[in-house]
Amino acid sequence: MKKPLLLDLYSDYLISSFRMATATGLSELLGGAFSHDQISRFLGQELFTQKDYWKCVKPLVRKIQHPLGVIKVDDTIEEKPHSTENEIICWHWDHSKKPKAGHVKGINILNFLYQSPLGQQGHISVPVAFEIVKKTEPYLDAKSGKVKKRSPVTKNEMLRERLYILHKYNKVPFRYVLWDTWFSSKENLAFVHYQLEKYFIGAIKSNRTAALNVEDKLAGKFDKISELGLQTGQAITVWLKGTDFPVLLTKQVFTNKDGSTGELHLVTNDLELDAQAISTTYETRWGVEVFHKSLKQNVGLEKSPTKHEISQSNHVFAAMIAWTKLELLSLKEQTNHFALKTRVYVKAL
Image (cartoon, rainbow, N blue to C red; front, side, top):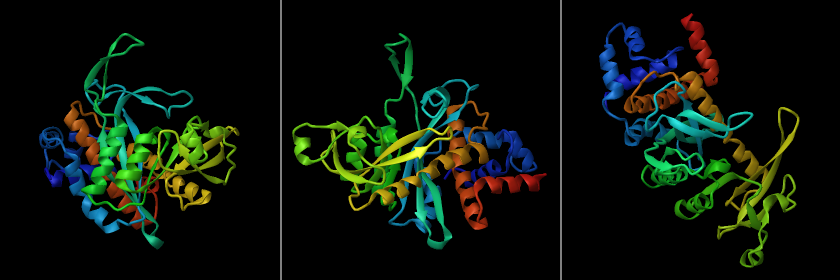
């Protein structure tokens, strides 16, 4: 590990800071024990890798790992509207923007959040890996006629590669992988089912098609899952088009803040579950949304004025470490990240 003491200090600084995280700010906080230049060199000279990251979190993962653990996969965008574009700061499609999705300038990070049950102590989560999307490949956009950049590796390909490493080489035990509709491609479903030999529970779009039995599948008779007459609380076995193994399909109906109702279809290859168990397990996926919010608000993910790719990437690395520290503190104090950060703020005042 490159300069572990400075990494430890910088990640602590991210937890305690309430403004932009700068080398000057940390140097002043330390009374000059480390100069501005030393901290800048730490952030900008050597790139922290995923091997480095695994070395940091491995001791904790080994303490809390559990065969019933789950890995929640989702991506987030660290918005950098005023930063110069480079291979990692670029434009990304953000479907979460309300009321209308659109492109956002920033760093797109694919996260793998591991949640382990700890019995009476509750649950603990650890980001066991993350991938930063790099757009290095120029291409001609047919619509605009402009030359743009894209990543040579899709997020779905990143997902499969990283899950394979976590399972095969890092030996992280888990039972389920949870994701939203973005990652419910037939390739991802087959990968988890066949290569990892694990279970998935994922949201799926209502216009995906499925057959109700093997005979219909072989005959090519597929209907939209929204037209199958599925009732809330019911789980039925179907064959999704493009897959060769059965899955359970269930439906949730929910009420939005504006009073309107919506539907969420879920699929899993764990055929032993019922509709309630599928929904209950999938609901834990919400933890990754809270994780993203805490990354941005409590450990300064978006509060780095760094200008170069290496230092920007290393700041993300340190923010992940800081979040994990905050998670351990929250478990010890039996409170959440936001309440703990408020306590730090009150003490500072």
